[in-house]
Length: 381
Image (cartoon, rainbow, N blue to C red; front, side, top):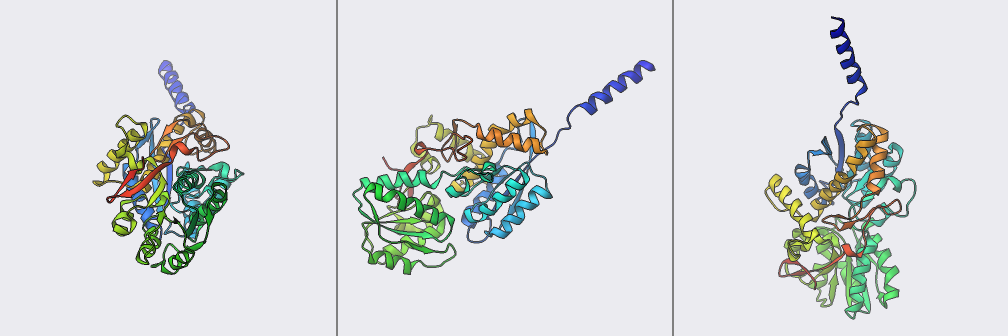
């Protein structure tokens, strides 16, 4: 009897000493409704394709809609850290919604992986941005690749139309900074809201300056409006867009009006033009297969943003688990540290190499020149 009691006592001691296993909670905030729904809807569908286990631990996803509203996004972020106790937040789809969430990340010491595009989310590095990461290539990388191509094509004057938020303004800052160095003159700075139903007034003002080409900084289907207006008013010059247009919806809505548009974008959009053994192609194939199995249709680049973010977590979680248990401040801190150590990770969005000073992790190897040709996105060779 004494032996049995001793064995039982040892077993109880081992159970108490062993760390309790806990699910890893991932909070997701996307713009599934409102003006940003063209981005958020594919992302909410991608949740079903995400891995259910990483590093031997169950992953629980808690997905919320911010309605493309920064106040709602902030509320969702606070709910996720206070009520749900998440280990990491992914979101939001839009830059203006993401920016207030940086405060929540800092206050709660919770890693935030944004799905939005603006460089301002991760630069300049400070206490808030120490907790923020971004899977979409920075504006400066894509703008640099695009502006160099524009200059080489013989363009000297460039009109500009952008959305009136952080995305459009971020691109305008990059374009106006780079243009003089490349011999380009920006003739206009016209803006419109994502929810507008026409950009004809902006197009007419641009045409009045007679630019050699026009640069449009917008995303999703709203990016069709200025290009359509330019073509309908007879503008025959070259039109350049940003990687925010890389969806089939953009082509379907724009039809012949968006033919010939050129932009610097991610490998995802032209994966079919890459060799089967190309590491970017393999990353794409894995994502598309998982998404199709979950949803029955093909994904777009915005869905790929969410997949790539979780791919980064797949690389970081095993190391963080060695340091602490999920659900603790130590685990969140370790996860943040591991994200900074990610090296040579091929994603749909590019080749990621994070560091303590670079929470985007890309260079121009991640920028591919892409053209709308024959109703498809094709690699410019």
